[in-house]
Image 1: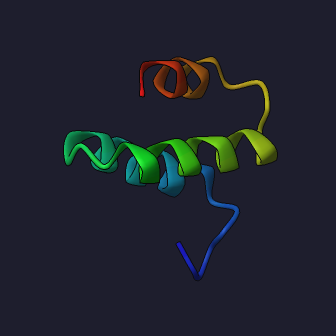
Image 2: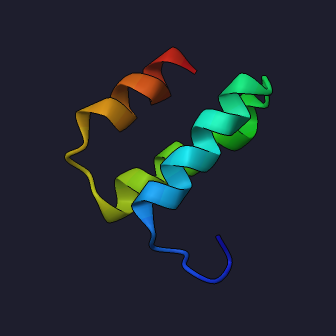
Image 3: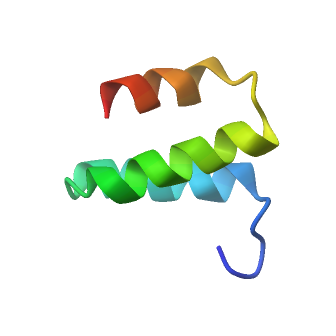
Length: 51
């Protein structure tokens, strides 16, 4: 993610992996960052709410 900080797909996969590992703080931070780049993604909002 350091090489492509605006890659929404990569960030979303990282967030999903963090959720599976029960690292909710990392997941929430990443999902919030995604919404900065793309604020109209319903799936991201759902995952953020669930986390």
